[in-house]
Amino acid sequence: MQIPLKDLMFEMRSLEPFPGVAARVLELSGRKDVVPSELIDLVQTDPGITSKVLKLCNSAYYGFQREIASLHEAGNLLGVTTLVNLVLTSSAGKYFRDYGSAKDSNMERRWEMCVANAIGSRIIASRHGKVDPERAYTAGLLENIGHLVLDRFLDSGMEAIRAVALSGSSLIDAEKKVLGMHHAEIGARLTTRWSLPEVLVDVIRHHHSPEMAGADAELAATIHLAEILTQQVEQESENADPHALLYEISQAACDLTGLGQTDLAELTGLLGSEMSRARDFVSG
Figure 1 (cartoon, rainbow, N blue to C red):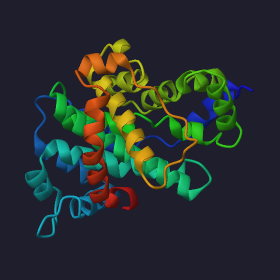
Figure 2 (figure 1 turned 120 degrees about the vertical axis):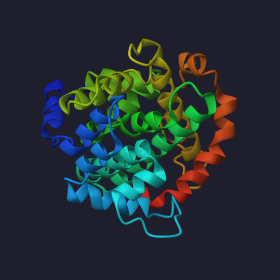
Figure 3 (figure 1 turned 180 degrees about the vertical axis):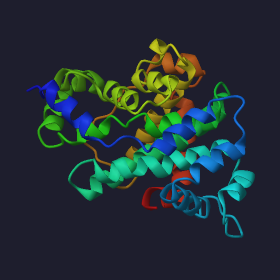
Figure 4 (figure 1 turned 60 degrees about the horizontal axis):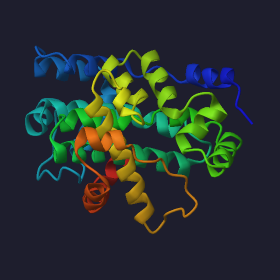
């Protein structure tokens, strides 16, 4: 069974554009001459995003002793790059809640795994020191945005993907055989439609083959390993699915970062602990 490519393209077009303020913030944050107040003033033009960001700033994850009442205060306490990532977290969450599978529990789980990828990317970047941890968080958060489209075909498509994978194909190859393209390519096309920075599009497209990433191979390798780390944490949880299909670790990602399975095993406890503190990101 193969899902018609035209159906995939329709699902991509059906997604609302990424919030303009968030896209503009992401673009501005990549400029070396950007002034912090310029970013904050832009965010404040969207009351919805502003309120969500402040809610996250005041969550248990950061544990401030007093309430953060303004974005300027949040920027001073957290730093502008962290503030940018809170804007993206606030904006991306709606897609996983509104456009994923029909089951609320599946959407929440998918969103939780995206947050885990983001935090895991920050952890891994801090470990190898080759890319900026906050930049890694951004890419990790959106690396699996293509799964939103896959989730639309949860009943028919995922069963077909499972069948192909169990016949001997890797999971990423099974997606391509059934859908015509894998989730990383779908994610790259979505972020292109949303006019997000090209480096982000490139690392999303190649996060399962980071050696092919022309913009930043080490960043692509970092978010790939974060996805593998998230899988490992998931498999060690008490609610783990023993029949879950898993993505394979890329040797190129290990070579690019200098990290391997042993390093990831050492980081599972840290990611699990960080996710316990980050429940507000998932439910907020």
